Image 1 (cartoon, one colour):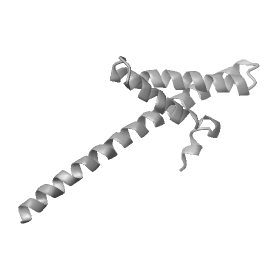
Image 2 (cartoon, one colour):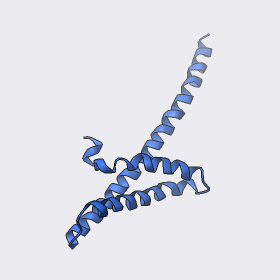
Image 3 (cartoon, helix red, strand yellow):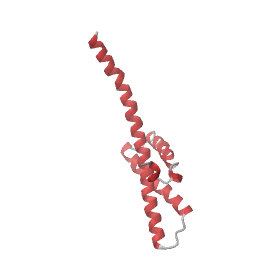
Image 4 (tube, one colour):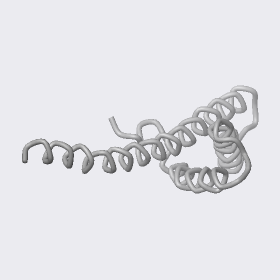
Length: 110
């Protein structure tokens, strides 16, 4: 499976937008636990803006589908940006731990 099976190609640009928005929010006074929710709501709003601008919404089924697509796409792009941030942090933390572990092992061998 490919991420494009889930996230519309035209909405992939929202992932880095939300990632950098999260970085700005992290530097602000907003508590960290609120940042994913803010990014989720922002992702949904931006996806809704895209759907409204590009999709004919003339009847109730079209409106319902547009709402469904907006919510799911917004959650997916926000979730992907938060997931990327966590992967980056974990990768950075694991790389900091490796030299210390190897340094301790090498000392015990000599």
